[in-house]
Image 1: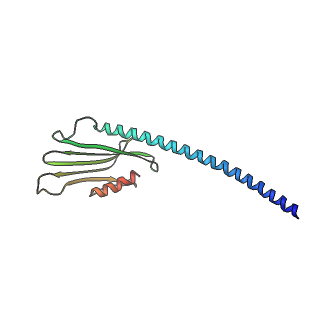
Image 2: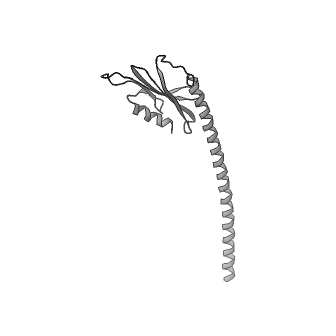
Image 3: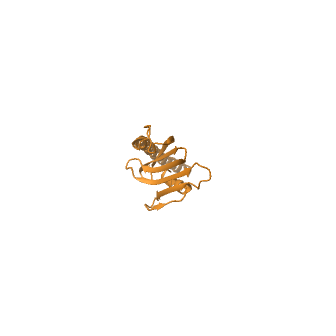
Length: 165
């Protein structure tokens, strides 16, 4: 009886050793796949960043000219994001201009490769005292593909956030 128990224990240890070995092999393969996916993701993010910068330059930034000649440029900048779920690279360009009478703020979200516009927000605020609220123009394309107007910067930012996450 004792030798049967020992043989049974040896058999169990053998089976557990085989299972442990197969799990170790599977874990190594999963780690390799994760590293490969991370490298691919980093490559896509790098390509996206380069294309976003090109899209920014294509729209006239980094040249010292403006579309509003009497205005002084207050600042133009961009941010980019590769959206893995949508398999798209987005660039969000923000710009502002100001002269003696008004301040213009513009934010636009594009597909950096296709140039398709997904969201646009602009507001013009007259700088003279006693003037009315800013004039706002806002349009967005929802993830569903539906295009619709928006009425505030917060609505614009909510849609942009969905693309930039």
